[in-house]
Image (cartoon, rainbow, N blue to C red; front, side, top):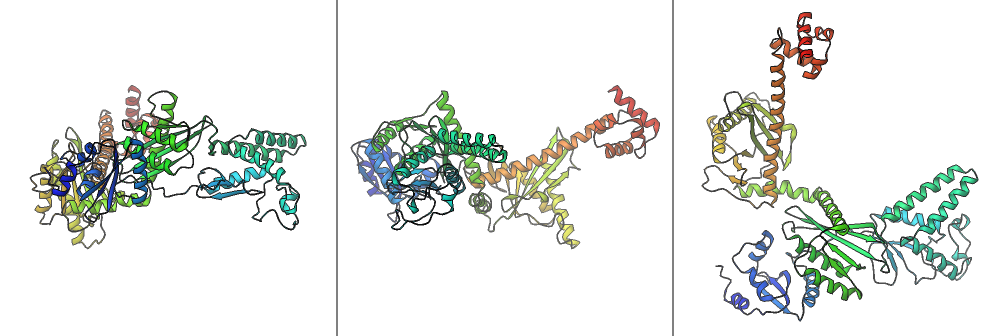
Length: 617
């Protein structure tokens, strides 16, 4: 039983049966985690029991030096307080909603006498109407262009109304502005035109499509076919664009779909927006270090932070999963915040469930793309290799890692694969195959001994010959053997028998993913979510894949050779030349007698024997 100290033990004993929030602190007094609980006694005590915890929670517990509590009257109060405390203190071990991008919005400030469309990166509570978010500034500019092609809205930044009317610009001359700067348009007329703009941006664009179709028909009737084609394309663009755009309105039925994807390390939450019965957009948020946490807990924490700062709370929130009781808490909080009815649910079947599954698919795609980014890539390659070296007790960074695997079929066509990872990434030009020559039958131990001995013998020979940069000159910093202690012992002995010093080596026992070091009594077991074990698994899997591919190729060639041996008069040399000329058994079967005669070493009698064999088959 862990001794937490007299002060902390007393605090744990005095915990009340009450809703509230708890604040975990480290030795410096920094708040490292904020949580809420229906029952503080049960929840907080659970951290200090010697029971299994997730890796993140275990790491957090190791840093706890003290904690404080704040009592609340209801669970809803605890939820609101937790959101505020997380926002204020930004604790390291909390799920923190960090969006590394600010999607653009369209802003229309109706308090101005002659409002225009503005691009902005944040929604403010300033009384203006916002539309979006859009996926990139180009999408916003397309919307603005589409609007200005239909509505003569001003684009200039002049302060209006002007004290002295000005001469209208060219936009007025071509019908793309009502020229309020010149006093040619009243505020009432401009505001009436803006009502159409707002309807268009809100998704009610039937009037715009009707107007464009009328212009297209008029252009076609006047035989201005190029103009008609341009308007036709504009109609298609507007329809496609408005299907994607998100109108922030609250006078229609709305649904937000929330799902999460996890990869053992990080999480990606996807939120999709359904407006007016159709999918109109979405957004995703990366949550580092949350890949191993309960998906429902992740979604609940995300939703609380997201809607705390969201400009729009929808009528319905559909979640992939939530912890027990969380839906009711979120629903009560969102109703209070919105000031009207809100429903939070986790649908298990039907159309709504299908929509949530679509959000899951989007989350998985977003996580896959995020993982390809450079920072994550670095963490899972170079950093993973560095940390692996430390775990194995190496005194230097294992820049070059070589992985070995043996493939055979009941001892036949035995082949060894050597794959190379440099800086945590596959270096495929460095891969090598070894045909096992001295071992009979399925004996992985002796096969590994032969492979490592030949690999290091090649390196020694290249160094003696002064090759400099031969095929085997670059020696590994670390070797992975697919197998347990026995396989590792044979591989290491091969290098020692050459009078050379082996590098750091380990075996990976596949059943439990145990890491065995030379002469170790017990294996090293890494958490399956760590980048270090995932790197080791990638090396092992790549060696296995590379070996299997070469073994299958050899087995296929052996099969072809054995079939050609059935043909009278076709010996080893002719078989070799036939395969060289035609490349496959199928091509040999389809060749004519004359084509077969043209092969080196073949005569007509041999060609006819091949044809007879092919027809018989």
